[in-house]
Length: 216
Image (cartoon, rainbow, N blue to C red; front, side):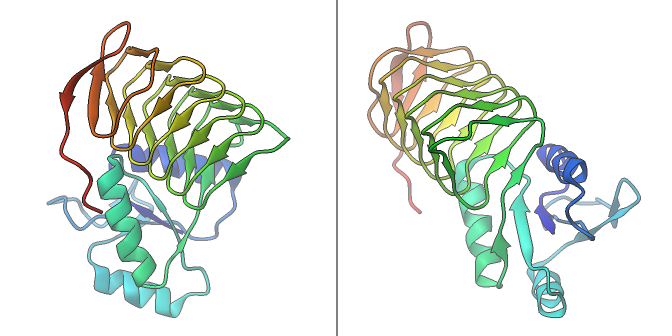
């Protein structure tokens, strides 16, 4: 499996994969960072351009990849590039996350980290990042490439649009709908519906700014 990224969050994704012991070979990809060296932890090879990725996929039966970076737009862009090279977008789910047994669906390429709790009848779409110790309540839907920072709490019967970002320890109260491309600040409490392309901060959450619309 290739982990996209070789710093920060990519190292946490490595731990999840290592916990599950489910891949014979793990590599990283980073074509941005200068002076990175050739190995992560003196063990895992770093691919540094898309030609290396293409060559690796063409020579292997295992063409899986996962995202080890934040930012929904960057995640979508790199997913698209790797998919065009023949990669298979794959979820990494910590064995120490608790996922209910009834009515859940998890799309391809999600990262679900240690300590997270997902109850029942929850739909999580492609490429979602659910960081450490997040919770998602029953009958909620999480759109593509949403990013939840540690401690995010989504209550029951919520709908979250694609490419939203939730700051650390933010909370969404029950039956709230949040549009796409919304940023919720750290510690904010969202108590009512939020339109697309908004920045929300505070307790209770207030729309402070309109954001440029997505261009994906």
